[in-house]
Amino acid sequence: MTGTSAFWDDLERDLDDPEFLREFVVESMRIATIDEVVNALDEARAAAGLSKAELARAIQVEPATIRRLFASEKSNPTLGTLAEVAAALGMRITIEPLTDDERARVTEPLLAGRTADPVSLARHLHELRSRSKLSA
Image (cartoon, rainbow, N blue to C red):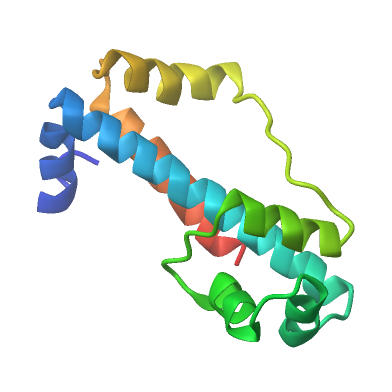
């Protein structure tokens, strides 16, 4: 990543700042997690043959709420909304522990506010965010 673009070089330098590192990790994980959950729910909706309007009626929200949930790149749904949508699709939202590798790559730098390898951290978080977009 180093030397490939000014963006990546700047990001690598910025990750030396503990406050920036924490914000970057938290935001990256938030985006990847929400994208993954929303994409899975939309796939379940489609597999169930439900329109967005039918799903909205089932959980008693405006159809625009469901359209925004599944269409917006800036979706930031509440856990309550996700749980309601999941229940209407016969699912539930659960949490799972990170792998040991991800704990080392994400959790430890987040808690410490520093990383020995900012390039690896930036690459990993970029891959997480990209992977969640690809499954859309």
